[in-house]
Length: 325
Image: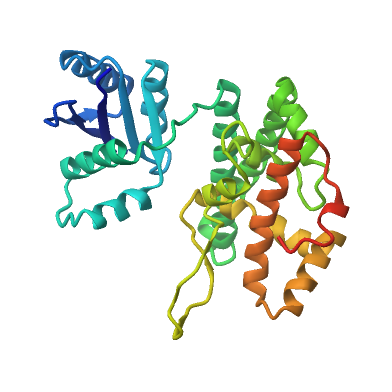
């Protein structure tokens, strides 16, 4: 069967599509709304070109791609969601010098045709709900921090309003935390994974919800390295010959909310738990700077979380006493 490849450049409000036909010709469709109505128009456009089965590829830009990916996956198309950095690097290798939405869509389709990226697996309805709750919690907590910063320097005319807003946010946050726990309790699969993650010293309820919401488990990601890369916690090295030896850094090419949410758990683990203290002491003795040690623990937490869920066994400190991570 001939394969059609569809590249979609996703923005908040619209989709720009490029369809690579089996004969090598292109068909383009610009300005489709990033809404269910726009998805239905896209489906009709594909049928008009006799593209019944399509390998669709799009970049993981924020959350804007999710609804389109879910719609196309439910329509039995193969959907791949790739890191934007992959498309950027592919474009550089093809010496693409111009950048427009149409050119980007064609570049994504070419990448799909040449590299055949792995199919994306849509999260369950329960996982989607949990992710929405966790992202809303993150947004409310960010608002609370902003208001706390404002109230310290606020004039009397507005101080009471800010304090009232903080009180309201506190109530919303508490209610949302309860809702997240009720939701996990209502799903046997999520509840079982929560019990496994709860065995990891230093990992609390909020972090557990974050890991479950972003599908850090074998059903979604192939191995622990991929899980770390998904969060942008994989190390990036810059070395060349005998003279260039850049400091290793986190790639940060991944989901920022997940990465941000692992910072404080890493700090707690490094300084408040036995296995974390041993981990910190080993890396410090090897001359590693503090920020690198924190990043290494953030990555380690992802690896450990992935491992306990994959094995179905609680955290075993004996497995990590001699491991550098």
